[in-house]
Image (cartoon, rainbow, N blue to C red):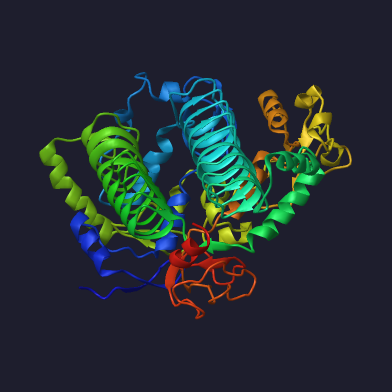
Length: 601
């Protein structure tokens, strides 16, 4: 077996290629990577823009459209209905492979000449303001969602939702607000890592709880406030006193709950009904290592973020789904034997391709549907294809592409970020691995400066009435200043110092106002983008650290949490170690599964 020690050509840090990784690479006939796992993940994320959209003209029809590719980019953009139609032929952009020029430069030329869909949507009704979505009805400003109705500001894997707002990563939810990494919840606001909870506010790591407020680590409880039991009558009396319909009261509760969570033990990872896995947010899966947000019968994955619905045998995947198998270095793909490709909707034996549907045997193709044996969108016979592809791979190794920072791309590397149609801060890379502009440019990424905002602000943040009951219907006509934005003296020019894609101003849509009134919640003071980034800050990073359980015997090692029962290790410090997404410097009390279950389950 080869020596597994490597130095990442991007960050220059050492990383290890495990023996089983070499076996996987040999199985799919690709060389070992030259980037470390984290740099590979960032490189893939730099190709996925979910929430940054622009107004521009359709290059086919001239109509005004919303698009994820900025007008100042060289790429052509078609309105998606036209893009999917038979009014143009993707094969007409095909070209002969040129052995006098490196592969990625040739791909870049075709990629910039080829028309792209303005947004990625399917089976949506009255949900035009969305991207990477399907099966939505009456939804507004949503991204990366599947099957939802009457929702808004649903970002990042919100699946099967109804009448919800401001959600990040959730399954099977109804009338929920500010929910993160939760499932099977109804009428829950400000919840994180919760399952099967109803009619509750401010929950963390709760299961099957109803009518609970400000609680952490509870199971099968009713009428609790900050983990203390109340009678039904007293519970509702206390809620009336707290009155989260007031923004001032709500902010006080947020601060109190944030401190309260730190006094309770946290399980080292959210892993349920799974075996031989490491990572976080994993359920019903097997043999997955260094994976995050993996659900529903996923097997044999590694270094991946978002895999679900029976995906098997993959590494370095960003969104693998629907039974996909043998996947490597992909972004949003289902199918078999897919490598170094993005947005592949079914098919097999596909490499270095982008946004193709039900195709087989493709190499370096874009936008093809129901095709096979194509290279650079040019049709070949089976024999011609099988003869030419090995020659191209050899050519990629003898004449590799070198990017602006001197990183060498031979066969086996994913597309460089500098070929992406998006700047770093337009993509989800900025959400999960945030950089300043200077940091991004230093690393060789492009950066999109915010465009001037010339809104005429009609309501300043400080002028919003404190309580939802005092909000007039006319607020839906206002242009409201985001609390993170600074306003010029004439109330027109808005700037922001935050690094979170701040929109600087926002509106309250009618369905949103009705939702806040039903839930007795005050109007937000931040724009939807800034609210989303505040939710992201509550999630653990997509990294793992080796740590020891912090159970010190009769209490946590920081002496904040007293254990309620004796653990198997008695008065001694627990010796268990684990891989966790809680960094060692974090303030949370992190327990192994045994100590955590003894206290919480």
